[in-house]
Amino acid sequence: FHTMGRTQRGVSTLISKIGTTPNGNQYFNYTPCWKSPWSTIIGLLVCYSSPTLSSGFVGPTTTVGTNLISGSRITTRMNNRFGAISVANRLLRLRLKASLSALSSPTAILEREIAITTMSAEPSLSSWITEMESDDASLSQLQKRAQNFVQKNEQSCRLSLGVAGGGGNFLGVLASTPGASNILLQGNILYDRESYRRFVHRTLDSESFRYASVESSEYAAHAALREGLILSAAADPKYGHHPTRNMQYSVGVGSASALRAQDGTERRSRAYCTVQTSDSFKVTLQARLAKTGDTETDRTRFQEDVFLAHCIMTTVEYTLQLRQNLGSLSSKRDDTLLIDQTAITSRGDEIKIQATYEHFTQYTTTPSILEKAAELILEGKEDTVLLLAKSESEEGQPDFQIVNRTVIPPLSLVFPGSFHPPHTGHVQLVKSAMEASKCETAWFEISLTNADKPPLEVGDVGERLTQFLKLRDEMPKHWGILLTNAPLFKQKVELLYPLQASRKYNEEKAEVLPPIHFVIGTDTLVRILDPKYYNNSREEMLAALRSMPCSFVVGGRLEQKNVDPSKGPVYVSGQEDVDKLPDDLRPNFTLIDGFRVDISSSEIRRLQKSE
Image (cartoon, rainbow, N blue to C red; front, side):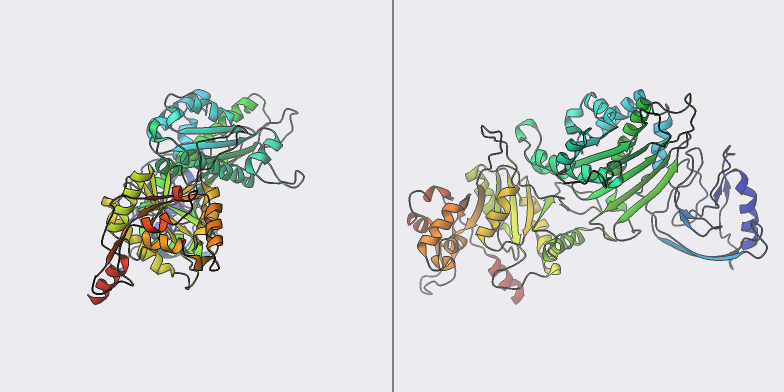
């Protein structure tokens, strides 16, 4: 037990009532903290650390516990001046039977099962409150925080903002900080309701929709992330930013608020901020600002705006720390909710922060992330899922990241296949095709649905995709996996073409999307050019090729089926098939000169089966 001020006597009595364990050890360690001038303690907090209960006081940080008097679950709802202990690093369960007669009526006997789910990686809201209040949440303090933020995150964050109403000081201060160009993609001040509706791409009923609400900030964050991913995907490597890296670190920030009214309306100002990452972390902060009615002590409208800017900074920093420590999370509160904390500032502002992770599992590992990605396709929730391969992942972190929204960068090369299993021949083909086409990023595309067969099983997909990691050292510098529900080439083009990002614009300032570049083997080339897949009509086949905005890079292969046994396998380059095409279609096919790898997935499966 860690207690403050007036609760110390009660806890001492409670400990004496509980006594000791059968082996003579104390149930609890007890450490009184400094005397607090505050007397609004919410019951008794039961705090845990692992592997043994600790009595070490570590200062203001997150506390998760249970109110033994009311029996309700509570989180950190205390002034930052209060002391607390570090939260546990794994799930602990404790059954406690205690007589609280010394604290309440003589007949009050409460039995509680206390299940505290905690994470050593859980950031502390109160530590940020302390930083905010170190200079009364001033503009100069915000500038210092922005400088530290840029220095710490210039290699791991690409921000896009949609600020509705107050909070514009966050954008102004961040943009004026040296080095911010490495972090800030764009910022939008959405002061008019129509500008907000256009930004979030939603038709909203002005009478029923609350523009100052959690929902409003979430819409803005989602739209900001969408814009940020497009900008990140279109990044030009010539300037030091590669699309896949930028997409991995893209963050959308949205805020909405109802601050001090000009007409002097007696209401508490409200502020909401949501941060959404490209891998589906979402952190939402809600703040109700203190209002005493004293014009000398209440904040001005400008001061409230600066305070909201501090809240936005806190939410962004909180999100990045939580995301960085994903591998340390050992358990979860429910399906997606990771954090639910509340704090009160010295002024009396109420701040609540919640964090969710859409793809969180009890043990977030590479296989579980891959299976989650497959479920999104097979359950019909998504038509495409983009998996970014991390160039380096920390211990305990998954090796792939599910991108919140599929965006295909310019100069991408899509390699469709079953990859059952992926092998070095696939890697050599894609690298040769990238050199021939001058493409910069490779995507291994797998359709989880099939025109002639049942869909793949989730477990099979996870196992198959994990095999790509064995080839990581051979892979091109920038690569990823693209899961779709498009088994046919025409479906792939229709699905993927609109998802491209572009660096080119026409005279009407509209994006000009390039054709999609595919890399295929000669076995796939033969199927694409076979009239039997087009109602046995060569004319329909040619019309389909002309209608598809795509090009093909073709790698030769050793044909092992339907060959003369006396002659053995025959090398097929695809030249003969391409030569039969009309002049206008031939340039859409680039043959890789001299490419040959005599290995196939079917042969690998045959050998594995025999072994």
